[in-house]
Image (cartoon, rainbow, N blue to C red; front, side, top):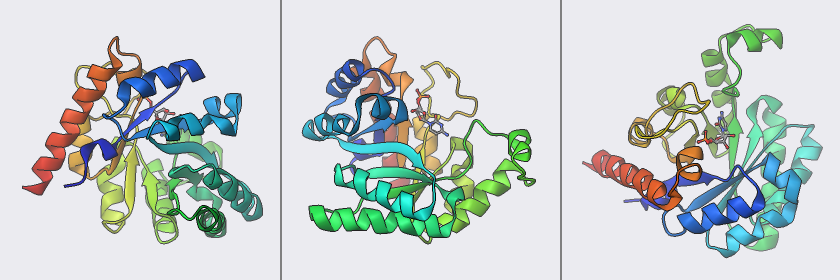
Length: 243
Ligand code: C5P
C-alpha cells in the first residue's frame, strides 16, 4: 500500500515563521507542504529550501498562465528549486502545457532528479457558472472542468479539483493521472470559507490521490494532533480501498 503520509499535503498559508512552525509540527505525519503565491512572493525562491531540508516534498502552487515561452522559462526556474509538484492553468491551452513540461523536464535533467508532477487547475472554486459567463464562457462550471481535464491529462500528470468533482474527473482520466483536492474538512473541523467540502476519508474513497489540508491543521490548537487525525482517516480509506 502507498504510504498514507504521501497523500497528505499541508497548506502553509501564513508567515514564514508560522509556516516553519506548522511544518515542524507535521514532520513525519505529512509528506508534503504546499506553498502558495502569498508566501512565495513575500519571501522569494529561497522559501523552498528550508522545507526540502526538513524532508518534505514541496508543492508550489503558483498557477502559471502566460504565453508558452514564459511558462517554459518559469517551469524551468521553479523546477530547478527542487519542488516536487507545481500548478499551471489548463485553460492556457495545450501548447502552454507542453511548454511547462519542456521546462520542467530540462530542469530535471540538469538536477538529475525526477521531473516534478505538473498539475492542471481547471476552474477555480471561486468561479461559478455566473462568473464564468462574465468571462465569456457559456457552459457550466462542471462542463468546463471536464473539457479542461480532457485537454490536460494527455500532456500533464495531474488535475486539481474540488472534492465534489473527484468522481467526474476520475472517470475522465486514466488511473495513473493524479487528482489533488483542497476543500477537505474532517467532521470535527470548521468549514471556514470552503463551500464544497468533503472529509479526508470520503475524498480518498472517491479517488483523490492527494489532499490539501490547511486550516483544519494549521488553525488547530494542536496542529500535530490534528494532522495525525487526518492521517488516520487517510490510512483507513486507503486500507478500505485495498479490500
Ligand atoms: O485552509 P484550507 O484547508 O481551506 O486551505 C486549502 C488550500 O487549498 C489553500 O491553500 C487554498 O488556496 C487552496 N485551494 C483551495 N481551493 C482551490 C484551489 C486551492 O482551497 N480550488
